Image 1 (cartoon, rainbow, N blue to C red):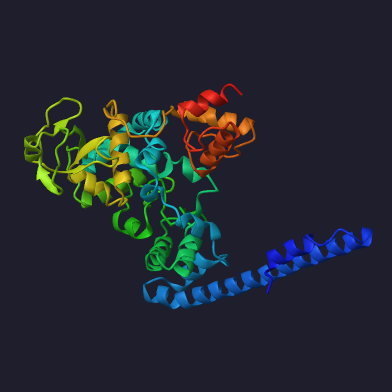
Image 2 (image 1 turned 180 degrees about the vertical axis):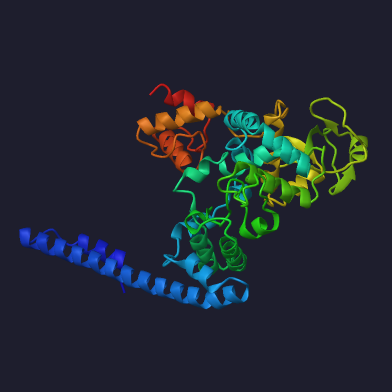
Length: 424
């Protein structure tokens, strides 16, 4: 039996003999087949929507038995009639777990994020001082988290990124078996946030996974850690930067953040030596020949640390202290915690890594990446945002240009590609 799309292809390949009448007949058949496909799709969508609505009806009793009122449930699900397919698409790809470390960090730790972080440090200096005093968490760590999560709130202005949190979580609970249990728990928590009056229904928005506000808290974490720092009676991490940063500080503090200590040290490893896994004191690592990359002494030898080489022995090496693992309470990915630590250090004035990553190309600055995207746009290869961040759209455009020019189509935003495209 031929499926719908194959059926259209078969019809369109009919013999061209028979003149205008045959052509008209072919056109009519194609239109009819397409209409049949559309009708079948509508039926399938309607069936899917009916199943989703049935799931919502069944979930109601679970929510009510968990402390959500009937009126809150009705308000939460008003207008939620179908799943969000983009949520399921985004759930298939999480860059902190799949992207090479240099690719992940180049998009997040760069001259632009550092400069903006320093601007925000000045703008919110009074609040950051108060938050540091209350929770003991370094202000630059909080600024780095804010940058990593929402680009200092800029992401929250984008309708193509921010989504209805109830619909997103309901979509995952209904249609993503791997995340269903998580999503059901978060959905109930989101409704409890609404029930408490912390935010109105129209502004209960978040990421595809239901993470909320400037610092992207999942609903259960919001309920556990949210802080009303500005004293207006609401824990508003959507609209109040002080609330959002204090909430992040509270999470880190309650998960064991050690005040006045770093997240880790970039180190140099002696060549040809194998190193044990697990945690050891700084003194023990020193006896094995590990030294700081900047040439300075370690501030103390008794602190425990774990050696990590995220890009292999040829890339940067780090001794990670307890605070690194506390950062993973925010996002359980080494790349994420490393990104926060590196960005925080550079917002605070450090010069960055001594040993660069093992990129298979010569890197370019954020400004040059934007230039590359502009050139690709002008040549018709790219139609995305010119922001210097290299995602799938930019990589595909670079590959298309490289193929056209007879270059190796690796898709990397390299000095080599920029040099060639500047000549076009």
